[in-house]
Picture 1 (cartoon, helix red, strand yellow):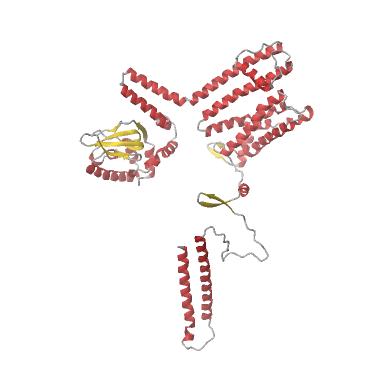
Picture 2 (picture 1 turned 180 degrees about the vertical axis):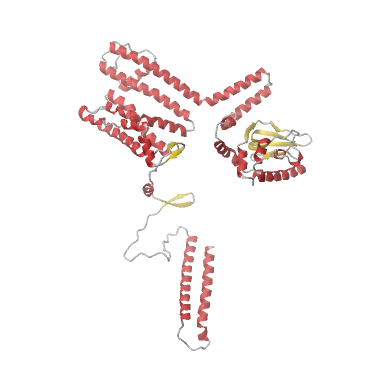
Length: 571
């Protein structure tokens, strides 16, 4: 197309040029005397030269386009006629190009260094949806856990020595640096809600953080007690204020649970970690008590053999879980310490057991709800002596519905949500199916949205009758998943047609087309079938507000009804 365009343009210009040239020399060929060129002839000559120049440029351009079409990866870097040429003696800097190849396509990309330079830190951060902020909180949590777990170890066990003191200090001040970045770079940019409005102004976000309780805790966590190292030496107890950064740890837990699909797994891990940490602190206290009394001085103290941390941790586990078999304390200090240890162990362990019970209970709440419904239904059927065949079908329905939907009644969930959120869920669940139904194509989009909120999902078992011939039609059906069979014939067992996902039936009687609203055939579920049901009352309430869509639906239903009269089927 491009080549043809340039070709026709060039031909037209050449024709015009030839015509101008012939008209300018015609008087000479007719034998007229030579006269000095007039202003008109000079203008014609100038126009002719310009047109010839344009023709030449168009030809060059066409050749370049042909070359690019023939060889797209050609390395020709010729400049266009309109581009200025570089001055002689100066070499224009050639920018390095980067490409990434995906399947059969080649894309020009930007080097990672240029991307990094163009990236800018956001002016405001949404603390609830920004994944980068969640990752940052994870880093802050790691720094906080470094202090929480290792401060007790360093001040009791002899693991911090003059030979490795520099390694401990480097990691300590790296954690402090993370605290500082969190305070001045992240926390001052967090969005917040005030009177229903999301505040993104820099000054207001900074003032909100500076006035918060979290800012006070963050400031206290960075008290520079490290300067006392010059007087008392490197003592990890001087870093205890770093533990006041606990609010970031709990914020990270909340944000992580919000984005996890199975948050109960993380809750179980977190509760287990709490138990391990309580044992960790108890082992540190036991080593301190043994060191205070003298390592190996009595049968109750740590003997000094083996790995000190593992031996003391073993003692802590036996104490807090009250397994027994511990050496009896000898001195008053040992007896007092062990009594307090027992009391704290019982208290801490009971809390952990209760918390673990709540976590497991929350994780299995859905299954417990399902079992309660199932048990109640079975008890009801046994009381009224329902036949075993019906009981087995009801149990099968419970099991399949729970596995396919994760709940027994979707309306219990949707009724708690605002109208806008119910619509969002309905669009995600059923719009892709309903929009492909020919009956609703061309209808008002808002009418379809209103209809989606009224649809109910119902599961039918293999062999269940969805509707029977002769009954009054009070609903229409849209197949979400599975198949249904339309039965007819003299014996009522002949399969007239099999309807699959996306098919609609029962719409004619619902729209009262043909003067009646009774079913004309049986419809049976072939295998497990999940159907959307729209009641007649709900549809009429919707169509009152959309008269044009109502006319269109009745027109389509009438055409379907005429086909049904000819070939038989379901109304």
